[in-house]
Every structure is written in C-alpha cells, then in structure tokens.
Image (tube, rainbow, N blue to C red; front, side, top):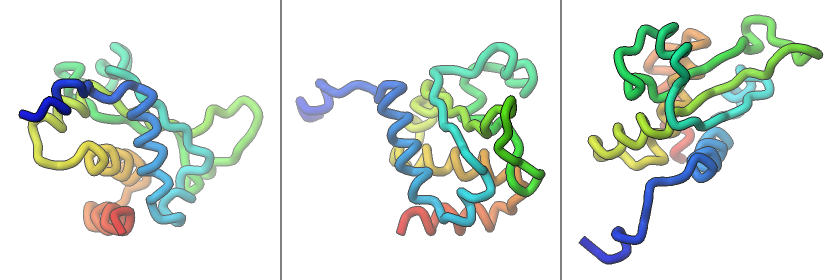
Length: 136
C-alpha cells in the first residue's frame, strides 16, 4: 500500500456533488433535456421517510432517488413548483464502490442515468447507450 493512500479519505459531500455535476454535464443533451432544471443533491443517507416509502431494509439499500416530474410528464418551471431533484446517497455509494471494481465516477454516472432513466421509463439498453455516450 502506498503512503499516498494513507493520506486520502472518502470524498466529502461537496466533492461527490461536484463529481455528480461533472458526470451529469457529460450526459447527452437529449437525455438531460428530459429533466428540466435538475438539482443534484448529495446526502450521506436517505431520510427515514424515504427509506419507509421505498421499503428499504437498511439505509445502504438506496444509492440514489429521483424526485419530480420531467418534460415528458408536463414539467414546466412555475412559481411554487419544486425543481426536479436527484439525491445521491454518499455512504451507500461508497460502500458499493468498496465492494466493486468500477471507478467511483462510473458508479456516480450509473446511478444518475438509472435514476433518471427509470423515472422516464427508459429501457436498460437505452440507459446503457447513454452511459457509453457519457464515457466518450
């Protein structure tokens, strides 16, 4: 183990949020257009309310969550309407990263694409293509 790794820690909430913003910016424009004005938030864990609503057994079961409506469902920016939001859950993502060979950036991109894609009914093939386009 190199001494460099001994000095490193897990990315902070702000660092992971910056990583997510960069990953989102690399997604194809037509995919991002589905979301309207999307806000990406990173939290350590989902709230108890979200865990209950999603019927999660542990706080580590959810890596992310899309909340809102998109252009396909009639989203319009209006006063009093909350923006579409994606929540990424830092600790579950870090645990998943520790157990897999994917890079943290790839995992963050995957969670973003799948949260948006499942919300809009995209197929797994569509989401795979979008992830590949983001990598180029």
